[in-house]
Length: 265
Image (spheres, rainbow, N blue to C red):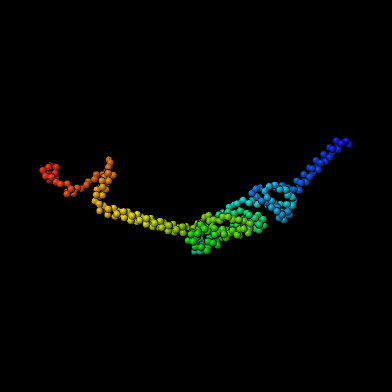
């Protein structure tokens, strides 16, 4: 056998071995891809091994499995639920919750459904807090009530591997008859404020008129100037006719002239 035949034989053998190894690797291993916003929990025969970060990974095909967890922030709306307040008023409340997973191992291994647990925790916290408050207290604390609920829920959510960074009251719905009562109260308050403002305006106007009257009483010439200003302001095509009475002592009467008042008489 020549050297060329020997070299060709070993080349073919090498190629066959390589193809066999590739086939074995593909049979025994599989490729998993973890995206940037995910982590994957690796299990061998059901036993947790490690967390796979973003990128491509090769795992045993027949014994290894993965469970993907989305690490991005998400929001949850807790639908309207009926709550009885401390003064026996039934109202409906909905909540907005913002959360993210900070410990995927704890989140998946501690609870069968951490999502449902978070939902229930927020529901119960809102019910416990509002059931001890009267309706006026709820209205007064409606802005800060979400922060109080957050402080209650946050430690319990952390035990599940979840971080809640926002919990706010989204909707607060009162019964129709109670809304009408509060609307009437608000209307009465606004009407009282309007009446008070009108009274203050009238007092200010009367005070100004009294001051003007005192000034005119001590300065008769100002009255004449005021009259002249009024006449000037009324000048124009559509200005009214103004008749001024002239006291007899101001214009002396002269006899012998037909234009005099005595001649007219």
